[in-house]
Length: 366
Image (spheres, rainbow, N blue to C red):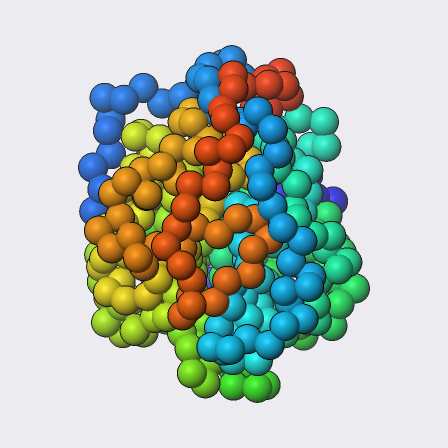
């Protein structure tokens, strides 16, 4: 069942316990946070999520494109990315395709009747995806590991790359064990065709209920082909890891970094746009494709605030990528960003009684 927490056992548990990130029965952040956590900022309550804030969803669907025709066209540069919403990106790199944190479900929640509801549909049906070479899952939160989506993907003969422990969910949902690779930080695996994945540090937490907090690892990832290299942040706060990742695994052609669903009191486990720009600078290379925004109402800020801050404060706006949903772009050829999102003005939060945020796994004190 998707609703209940799981505990690792056997060889999987032994491998998790051997990790340098594992202590006292769970995973921990082993890099110090570089962000000031505003302890004087009241943490949002369930009431705040239900009834507080305005402008947290757009008044109308966001502009989007059907990417299927674009996916049929050759890739001149060898690297193309299609943002499909939140942290879901179809990455085409050196002849292979990777799908990151795929979420097609209607809610980021264990329940079908309550929890954060999608305000923006995915621009293409999951059945219309081109053949995939890998599915990458950064961690086990509901807005990154989605039960109905994984169930649909089990029908495809595609390998899954993920963080230590997350494979127990995948197996329970029907993914064969031989198609799952779980990585600890700095571990690397390579697929046929020369595509490699290296798990890298992030500063976050995990859990799908009140009873399994930090029971699996969270990671960023570096994806490297024969010619190109891509960084994917997963979910993370700011830490010295970004500079180390850049030094050890860079340079990058593209960096996909989370920018949305943030709050001052969560500064150590989510970036927000300002810290995303700092993380980008510390990585030291690559064009920036912001993810983790424009899909779910998961925080108190305006839905479009991350995009507006990035556009206003990016030190090198010519390296910022702001594609519309479903717009397949080649970082080597992309043009200057334009504020396409302004066509969907923000409005007071709708459907508040059913839109409670990640009330089961709110950010903690790590």
